[in-house]
Image (tube, rainbow, N blue to C red; front, side, top):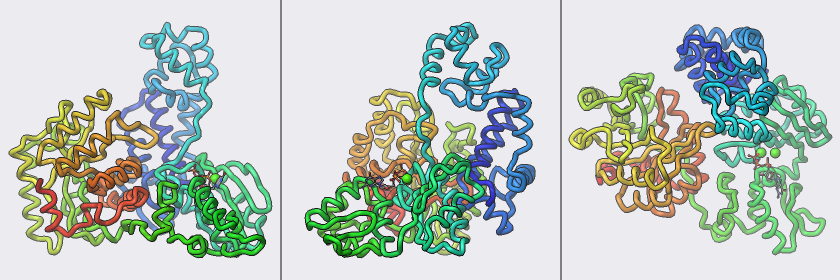
Length: 571
Ligand code: DGT
Ligand code: CA
Ligand code: CA
C-alpha cells in the first residue's frame, strides 16, 4: 500500500521547516509548503493517481522536480532531502518550531546560541532562566513556552479531506481481501463532520479475526493497539487511529447505526425504544429475546416510527422529533448546485485562465460561475485595481459572447478594510453582477470592532455575499472574534448573503452557523473559492456541511436558475 497523502504533506512541511531553520532559500521552503497544501487537498490518494497514469507535474504547485520527488517517496517510503536535513540538523527541531511563539528563526537562534536541539534541552533552558537572556525572548515567551511544554499534547483531529484520503486507501485494501464482505466507515466520518477523531470501520465478514489480521497487515499501520476476535484497533503512520469492528450480517444495520452515532443521537433513540419497552443496541432492536429489526438502518428507523434520518443530521439537535412527524428537511444534494459563486483566475492568485475555469465549471454541469478575483489590497495575490478589473470585465464580455448556455458572472472578492469600507470604489462595484466581500487582515480587532467592520461592509448595497465569514483555517487559525448572531441578523435586514466556503481547510461558516442563518432566513452561497479548475471539486465538502446545517436547496442561492439569481443579487 502506497505512502498516504497526509504523510507526504507532512514530510514536505517538515522539510520546509528544517530548510527555514537552516536559513535556506525561502522560495524553496515555500514551494514545499505550497505542495503540501495541494497534496493534502487531493480528492484521491497519490498512489491511486499514479496507478491511473496521472502526471503529477500537472498538479498546481507541483512541477517536474517535485513530481519526481513524490514518485521517489512512493517507491522508497523515504524522502532523501528530508533525511539529509535531519542528519544535518539533529534533534527535535521540527517539533520545537511547532510550539507557540516559536518560528524557524527563533528555533535557529535557540540552536545557535543555547545549543537547544531537543524538547528536553528546551525544558532545561526554560527552567534555568537562560532563555530570557536571548534577544527577543522575554518573561512572557518564557511563560508561554513553559505552559506549552507542560501540557499533554491535545488529541489531534484530522480534517475530513485528510481522513478521506486515508479512508479511501484503507477501504481498497480491506475490500481486496477474499474474505472481505461489506465494509463501510461509520462514526463522525459518515456524519461528515468537518474534522474526524478516528475512523470507525464496520465490516461484515464470517471470520472476525481474519479481517482484523488483514487490517493489522496493512502496510500503512504504525502500531496495532488492540487485536481481538471482533475488534482491531490500529494507529496509521499519519497518527490517525482506525477502529475495525466485524459484525454479523443480521446486525449490520444496528451496528452501523450505533457506530455512526452520534452518541447523543444514539442515546435519544434508545430512550425512544425504551418507551415501547424495547431494547436498542448495536445488535438490533429487541422485544425481550425477539429481534424486531437489525439488518438495515431503514427497518430500525421504521420500527421506531421514524423517517430515515440522514447521517449528517444525527446530532440530537431536534432531528428525531421532526422524523417522528415526517417533517425532516429534504437536504440539499450536489445535483441541486447550478454554479460556483467564488472562483479565482490567474488575473490574481489563481492558476488557470478565466476561460479554463469557465470550461471546467461547465463540464460540471453548471450554468454559471462568478469570477471573483482579489481586489488591490491583497498585493501578494496580485489584487486587481479599478483599471485592471475594467480590462478583465471586457475580457469576460468577449468570453460570454462565445459561450453557449453558460454565463460568467462579473464579480470580485473585495477586501473589507479595517473600518468596514471596501477596497474598490462604488463606481467600480456598480459594474459588477456580484461582490464577494471578505476580511483578509487585522484578525485581532475586538469582538465589537470586528462585528461592526463586517456589518459596515454589508451596509454597502453592492455587497452580495460575505466570504468565509469567520476566517478560520481548521487546525491552523481560529475564527476571529465576531458576533455571528449579530452578523446573521444584519445580513437578514440588508438582504445580504453569507458564504459557506467549501474549501476543506475552511468550511466557513460551519454547520451550526449555517443552521442559525437558515433559522434567521438568511440564504447561503456554497462556494469553493477555487484557485484552480480542480479546486471546484471541493463543492462536495460544502454540500456535506450544508446538510449538517439542515440546508435545503431553497436555502442556497446557487441552486437558482441564472435569471432568478441575478434578481436576488440586486439589493
Ligand atoms: P470522533 O471520532 O471523535 O470524530 O467522533 P465519533 O462520533 O466518530 O465518535 P467515536 O469514534 O468515539 O465513536 C463512534 C460512534 O460510536 C459514536 O458516534 C457513537 C458510538 N458510541 C461510542 N461510544 C458510545 C457510548 O458510550 N454510547 C453510545 N450510545 N454510543 C457510543
Ligand atoms: Ca470516530
Ligand atoms: Ca472510534
